Length: 131
Image (cartoon, rainbow, N blue to C red; front, side):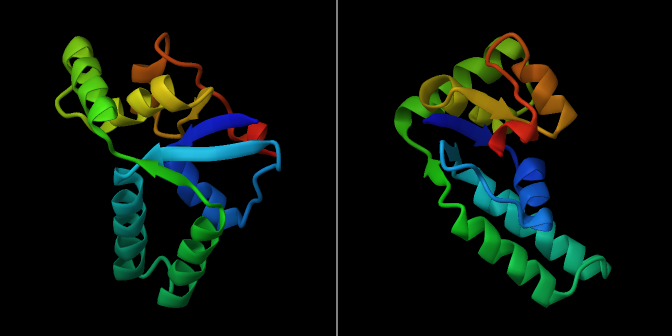
């Protein structure tokens, strides 16, 4: 089984397309993904880009993907070291990289800043690998 970490834009893309994840794959993510996705959907509804019903359907789809959310001491300490080593302004992107290093085979990052920060530290994969 191949484990992938997905970032918030990748999760939102999967939800928008109601995409399935292949049976040979599993998803993991830092716990902050839940808040980032919820915030993005809330803001889209507030802007009038989505209806509340559409946002709810997307959240339901993401819940159906059975993403394993992590936020333990080891991943937090690893994220701190990564953020410090890369000179990042915060630990948000470093949390995705840390969870990938500790628990996954690859990172699917549609956020260009995260993909750039992760390059050389973890394997960054395209969303097509989830099929």
